[in-house]
Image (cartoon, rainbow, N blue to C red; front, top):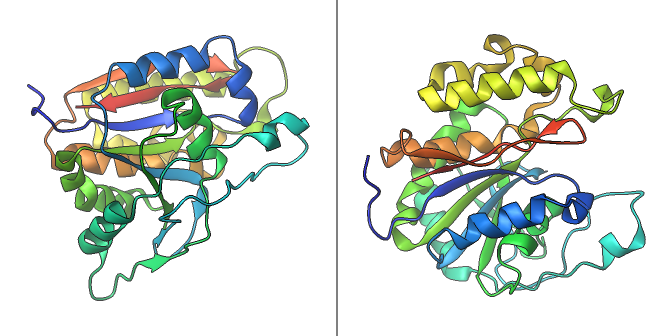
Length: 260
């Protein structure tokens, strides 16, 4: 399928913990990825680290970051990312999502969390692209796909829609150095399902994938993928997909994908 000129891709990225910024590979992988993209007019982030219903819009002006992690060295808490707010994008999101029975709320003091700013520091280090973060209003894959479908028209306005999670995420089950079998199995299965455009299997990943419940004992890090998939499906470009990042970090899959 040929990409539509001026339509921004939709991304799902594995953002990792703050120490991923010190990884010898990951920052350069994200920098190369962003360099290959058209320059966005704004970025709409959906992170695994903000669950709130009804769907909430974060700050539309620059406010302090949310350092939502504990026990890390001090320098991770000194990171700043003063990207401009995106009030116009917020207005568009409200227009697309708000309907009778589906309210949209504003949380004007809610800054970007590490699922948003950690990858953006590597992808857009100048902090010169407006950014809006919205919450995950549910973990239901089908409802999240519907959110993505409704947001899809933003892609034709130059908005980069980014679902930020982690392709496998079970810190409690990491026992040894290397890649655990459950992480490798789920990564291989997910890669094949995405390549085949097998939405039915992806939507039921907890039961249809090998080690699904081990790879995601709680599904918030896989959930942002479905917003991305909805934004891709609505534009007819599920088949126009590439893996931008793969491999593992501390046993967890870094798989990150681009549609369009």
